[in-house]
Length: 286
Image: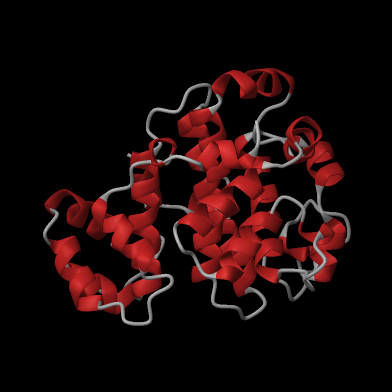
């Protein structure tokens, strides 16, 4: 198996809803019409209802009820509305993927997106695009399982796809990892080059010749999500913590109380629980 064989035919690519395709095109278009996107979303009652349910969730802490797609675009911004619709579209596109616990997988990706966004915001960064990367970072796993389930089965029996050693095992077996496949899909979909590069580097951001800060935040967010989804003990949590990466990003350990060197009474705010960070957004996974 090689990367080309995973994406070399249209029949091997996921079928993405039409509105999601239009939103993907907006990554590389300077002439995207927000009004046109709003009209397309409004024309899909089911999608509009889900978008408004998400926009009014506790996650966004909006001060008034968001009643229309136009309201959502104004209150949340185009990038975040695009994130919500794309996330829903990706869940639909990969609904039948052999050999994967999709409920666990998407919960992990949602947790990664929300944790990454929160972490990036601690450095004063607008985390909406980091949220995009968090949602999309592991779609390569879905593509690998959808196209080559027999080749993936021995790896799945050996190591959970969410394990922090999974990328290294894939490189050892195939010569590439799921991040390379995610990046290849993003290239086919005409994502901007910085997002393609970040998707490729997320599994091992410190190994990249040109360090991508966004990849670093998502890697750290994925670690936090893995702790939750896999139920790691405090000992496993500490042993797997990417301390060098956190230092490179300028993140002090006080964001999580159990980390060595953490000072819960210090100036760094503790991250809320992932249940709080993702409250209401689980509707995206329905």
